[in-house]
Image 1: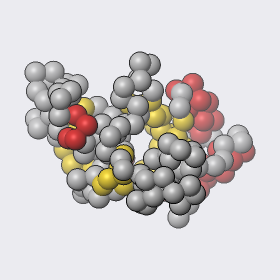
Image 2: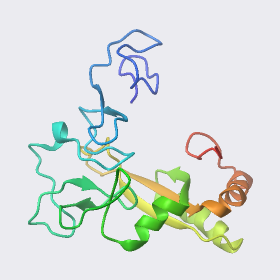
Image 3: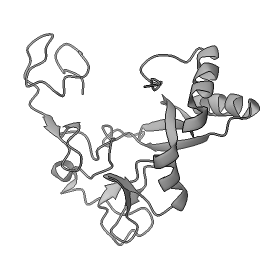
Image 4: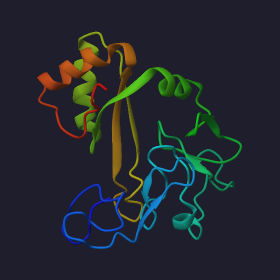
Length: 184
């Protein structure tokens, strides 16, 4: 979450912005995992995929596979809205019923996050050229549900065992910063 007064990022853990003192009244916690969540704008938790019922109660988000059913969450891998019939879980994370997604949660890591698919395609092509398997997933940005262009989050995932090698390739391409996972 960003402070609406001064633009300071990551104020979600504070009742007041540590930079300017503005109250962060929309700060809250995800009901599923307890992660900080802007309850006024996020439609789902980006960490676990739990639906923000405060935000979505009137909107009636429907399942991407079964439009006659109301969604209960969003897959943390592909971003699909899922109903009770489609819901799978891994730990406290919501998944759709694609069986490969469980392995992505358990043995893959997000290498880099982009705003546009064409940017992710460049990294994907370079990783594949170097023999590193990778996957690209685009999903609705959880805090931009009202935007007319439906902005996305585009993630590039690689197997955990190839993460350090993939990170070096990303760095050679000039990709650094917050969007890249650290190797902790």
